[in-house]
Image (cartoon, rainbow, N blue to C red; front, side, top):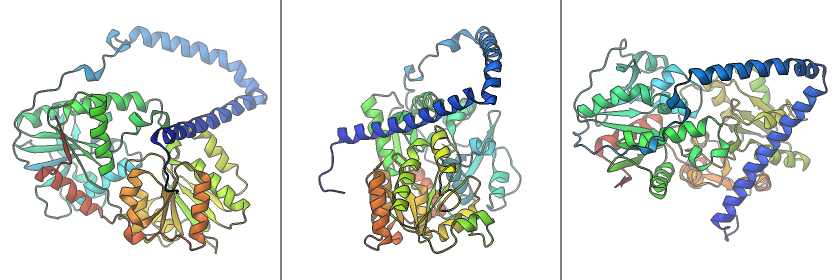
Amino acid sequence: MSDESPSKDAERIRLLEFQLDHLRAELLHLTHERYRLIYSASGHLYRFLRPIEQRLADAGGALLARLRPKAEETPAPVAASAPVAATQALPAKRLLIDVTGTVKRDAGTGIQRVVKEVARACPSGAVFDIPAFAVRCDAGRLYTANAFTAALGGSETGPDTEVAIEPGDRFLTLSDSWNAFEELAPVFERIRAQGGEIVTCIFDLIPELYPHACHEVTVPRYRAWLRKALLESDAFLAISRTVAEELADYVVASGLPHRPELKIGWFQCGADLAAPATRKPREKIAVAVAGDAPAFLMVGTIEPRKGHRVALDAFDALWKQGVDARFVIVGRRGWFEEAIVTAIRSHAEFGRRLFWFDDVDDGELSYLYDNSRALILPSYAEGFGLPIVEAAMRGRPVICSDIPVFREVGRDGALYFRVNDPAALTAAIRAFLAGEKIPDPAKALDISWALAARRIVEVVAREDWLSRLP
């Protein structure tokens, strides 16, 4: 990158243009699919059925409108409530780590990985400042999540039993609490009645800062959750220092109501994959990294902010320049991904030098890390960047976009390129292959899940918060 950085306004405009281009590609793809349906036999059949479908949808909508409570038609904004007055909390005695959301629905994303790894690490026999263990909520009552942690390979601690809330307990909503805040309300009341505190884990601010990168359902749900969480929580624990600083700045700049003396802290995710590299991966996995051509791995859900189109454009340029390299994508389908998925599957190199797997387990992921030349991570927005640490801990170099949280995680051990710039990524890969720029994985963040769990407990037990909002 040049020494003269563009202004923040210019970079924001460039980011908005990138998002617009992504949405335009998605729209063009859907328009093409519409035309294909119109001019195909199946399209003519669908055209006959469409009016029937529309009438059924209209009738169903009318019925729901009659049944829906009046209050639901115009929901009151969550932020309208006044902050609850602060009460004197007792010193922390135990940390109850809520995993309810992941127990009920494990989508296999990065959030669920954090929940499972921390839950696995806490009952491992390590001595922390205060006892810490996973719990789950059922019908307003708390139970240990022993079966959950045992299934993850954690230490056996017996059957699930009901948890009696004790004075000074801290309750950490580590799982995706935006789906369970109402269910947890009775627990919050009992925690506070015993002089305890509610600590909410926050993974990122992406739905607030980059709404166009998110599914349409996510943004209003997240915004309602954040405003409620700010009123319900005594503290927030972010998965990176970058997110903690973003949250503090955003709450102040937006004037969002929150509990008095709101505490904001951070920890960093571990990256030691529980499963060792499998010795006999499925044939399609082995084939993807076999041979002399260097393989570059990209790990993450296929969604707009992850930069799959940037990476594919970069490899297209490399292949046209005669560079024999492989591009291996690992990740499930997310949202606004129809166009890029079609571009991947219909690509001339698909199955030859371009591969995509949406069903890789931890053992196969470890195998792919071990047999790749480097990790590619072209996201323009993240809460942490877990693949950077996973790759570095397995000795794999990382080539990633130059965003603040990646600088926090990659440190001096990653090779950075200008965000959302395929040509810059192409140049970075060429420089890496030529030996001109070689990132050192040993200089990237090196932290295990055991250390991550210890950090979580220490922040809460020692009141080691980054900031406190008035």
